[in-house]
Length: 243
Image (tube, rainbow, N blue to C red; front, side):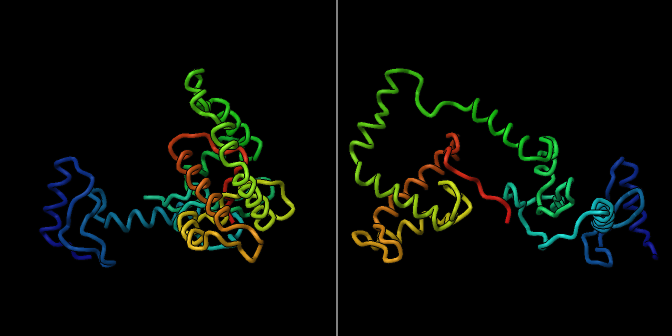
């Protein structure tokens, strides 16, 4: 490659200042920005890409073939990695492909023993040390009348909401113990509006009242908001798993 005098001057000036990069003033042959390495004069982006791909090939040596393409977001935390690609996660005992997760989640699973028992122990520890849902002060506790202020107010309505929970579990989790599967039908705000539009009628699919389904969705939305603000995760909830 023919190197211009301006290129040499810019590189030497950056070297004299103790910098690692300098601007060559023109893009490389692949169209990247003019930022180059002082040590070699090579394009910084090309250098990074080659090292990343080399590391990726080395890290995936001997790993199972993925059953689905790599997504943009981590399948565990749902975040999009800013710098590095997602890791191909697999069961170290069986070698079976599990999914695509970010480096932070991958390291966390490994530190917890890479098994369900370790994760459950961590969940137990966090829940044990969570702040209680109810106030500890006796006066403040009396200001949260769960029986006389909720069930005694809306007994028939809560019975209908309980029916919605049961029918929902039969639909989404047939044959499983009753639980709120968080990974299924999570569009609560839009669904509330649909049920509100049909309030006063029943759903012909299951015979349940649309108002009861609206109330269930409203409770779900409120529960998620409170958990996002620091409340404990509901005991009957099951967090979504990577599919």
